[in-house]
Length: 396
Image (cartoon, rainbow, N blue to C red; front, side, top):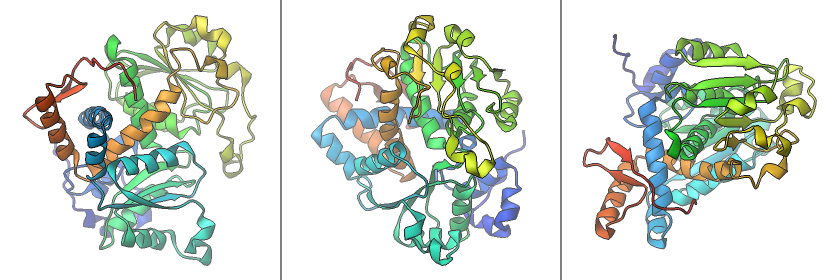
């Protein structure tokens, strides 16, 4: 097998952004990452491999556990206290914004936000690249959400071409990608399937507007890293999963089926991932959507059809596609899923900020001192982690 080419981040200067966009995604990701030993930019699901997902899972569990005590929370808050983050949310958000903001708080990162481009110099004609470079003059992380599909990549490219590249974390880009949501979804599924062999071999049913749902697009690509996974895409006509995702799955030997029905698939699903109609994109893509589709709604009356250990997820916000009466069912994981985002993003910031090893060593020392039998042990070889059976019943 031919070794992948090695790049420095400055190699981005060889291309205009239009030329950069035409590169294969794998090569573009290598260019943006450069020689960084850890994650630098977080832009798309394709940049993650299985070992990196495992690292994030382990570190998320460790951070959750450390944070249970005052001393542990104080330790975490001192890891990145010298860092600052810009939360640049040019598209509406509640959960992702608050999740990242709280994740920054956990790690001690000080935040400033821009939540409306009408308050920035972009309304005066400033280019997007200049706006991003301005942010990099003051901040160590740029966490951004934008209605345009390629703006996170453009921001990373512009910074790599500058004298001050700082990490860009994609918090949602148009109808295309939402990689950090996919990370927390993987974490939630792994937690849900801890006692049943993990995600491997499970059947995941994805329901709703799959064509424009960036959460399911990113999640599908991460699920391709788990052996034996089967995906069922259930969507109204016109809202089917796009070809780029199904091609990605085919190339990796992942079994999937596409359907315009919901009910026949409920009994075989190990997890159900509900989504709403993404009608905020109607104007931009010329689609005219109904608010919801009753035949693609999960209702309380459907619960007897589900497996006993089925996990029900939803990235939220929801409409009529997910019955609130389901909330108290133990299979409903979406409120826990929402909270998991805070911990997963804290772990991602810790890795990006290069304090992962400090946290691992603190946890190892804490475990030795207290004869602690918590959720994770860390081997002497830093990169060889293994989950242990958890004896803590409290889910944070």
